[in-house]
Image (cartoon, one colour):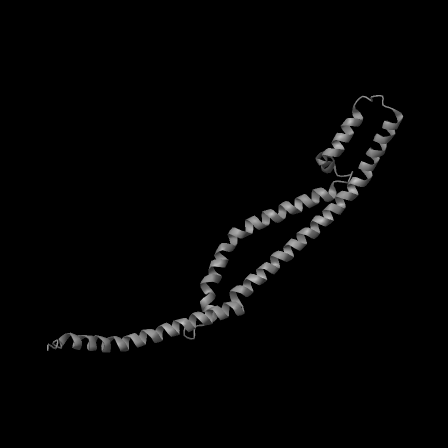
Length: 174
């Protein structure tokens, strides 16, 4: 780490990121495609000109099937109420679906912004001031360890020499 280029220190991590990138592309692409298809279905659900949306819209299919059944005699109040509900369903539901699609688009945009911000924060954590401070502490501890190792190299021979002298001296007897 003595004067090493920061880019050369990061090279293994960068290479690993690029090697793992293809594994991430497929899930992200599938998620985005699925969300886009769902939004298209929601947004196009009110179009009467699109035959696929009519087939996919279950409430409309049920409403049409109920209209095709043999009419059952109901009280005029109930018939009026059912007619108003069907009109409301056909007039307000497409607008509500469009609003829901717009809201879902906003949610996805917000989610993308949050993910983008998370990536920025992760990059800062890895390459920012905190990472540099941690690296500086590690380098400081490595320097201290080298200093202690040098002291041990110097002290150990003197300590061994003094301990061997004490072993050679005969014990004093009185």
